[in-house]
Image 1 (cartoon, rainbow, N blue to C red):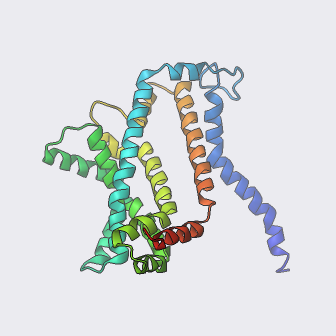
Image 2: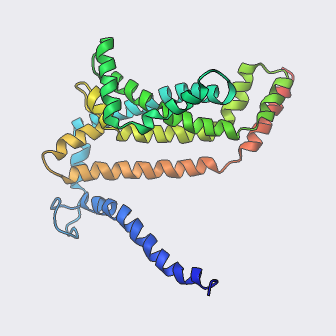
Image 3: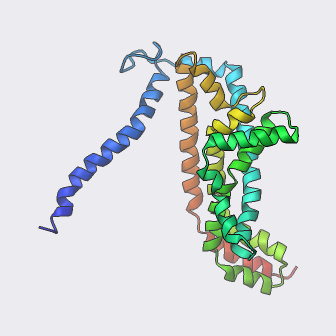
Length: 277
């Protein structure tokens, strides 16, 4: 009786899993279909397929200006968050200082706070500092709000790091700085890529912080939001489909980057350190 129960539950669990995935991905499928619908949004299924909405999208300069703004902000946020997040992760993993436990919890605060609180507080700081609202303030806001993502991901990577490789590097005559760049950073490659991709995605999708810190130049989420106030158009479905395709491509790239073994690379780096200059 007990041995047969998992087999009996399997069809029920399979149906449940299908329903869950349908609930998650069916709206995306509908969005993609309507991006090819000549008659716009309304009526299912779409009957007249066309690429005219993509042609109209590629001719829409304001939309692509917002895409470029979002890419600039996201790329800058990745650099800023990874730089500061790596320093914070190294401090948590390698150093002992008063209030370390409190600091470790404060690092997670931006992940817990609602976006509207983070955005409003950053706006107040920008006003206090006398900054003019622009893409730069948005970049600084995203980078600051997403430091916690970089810190938690890189701290987890440092916890898994084999310290014996760093010790061997130092024994072979490398300086701490050489060891950091030739051993520590390459061994954190997967964590850096994972954190960078996550920060990039969250920055591209951020609305609350952007809304408070934006100047005259719109990012893509705010441009889409402004157009949705006038009604849903297949052009928005088209840009959303392209974003979805890029996201899938990034996931595929990430899985391909995970496949090579880092152990062989670490041994090669240690061998290079042992070679006479």
